[in-house]
Image 1: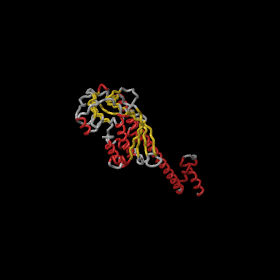
Image 2: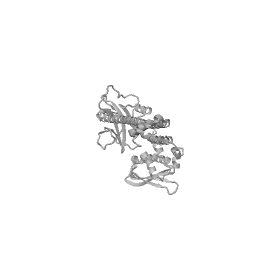
Image 3: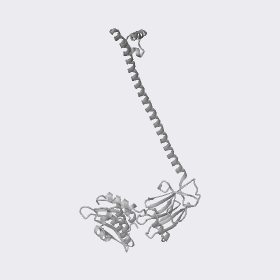
Length: 375
């Protein structure tokens, strides 16, 4: 009996899989009818196989579920990305199609004059026939370019460009430019939307350094002190930039250059070369100006350079003396002139240690106001 049971048990896996012969199948079925041991063995086999099948089924279901979720997520991501691209595309298309620069014939320049602080002031009034929806300006090689933008498709329904004592609007904008200390030569109304295009877009002169301006009206003076105009007189802009470029060592010429460039020394006073004295203290910095100075220009030249020297002494920490050299034309003759100011002399003039003016951006701003670079 045991031998027969062993044979039947060997056949059970084939019987369960349905791959045994018909004779073997009958032999197994006849045997298990009378053998409880082999019958239990058969049930045990079936239970194990069923558990394995269920596990495989669960794995397949999980894989299928994950695949469906990932497929759905990928689809939604793709739809979202496509929507973003479409929105940006439509926005760019609408901007290029509907936005244009306001033309010179659609703008009136009002109250072009000089403020009491010697800055240039004017207002730009857009024609009632259109509606401005943006203002921008930039500087290129000493020239200012102002662009007013409008919508090609939308006409103005009501008058909004009014000369009233209120903050700036795109339709009526007030401007102030420090042209003296920034070296600005010209201010243009510019009909380009993509920055400077080397003369490809039309430009109309608003102001030039050769113009003689009348004094600004009282209303303009009061407005400037009440609101913020467009232009290059934003409070704190130069001070923050200078403080950011503060230099601990005069021997670092590239850092010196950033400070001098921020002050626009070359643009205002002309081209120059640099000469350092750093072999031993006191350390010095000399500017060698290349252009000759007429005797009637000397006082203004030296006064302006002294203002810059104050800033250099404050912002270059170990600098003790600033000198400048130039050729003076006097009575038709040329002679070499050297001017200088030390940190001790600067401190005495200002009534405070010159180095203290470089302690913070606020202190730098105080220095700019004190020496008259900004007012």
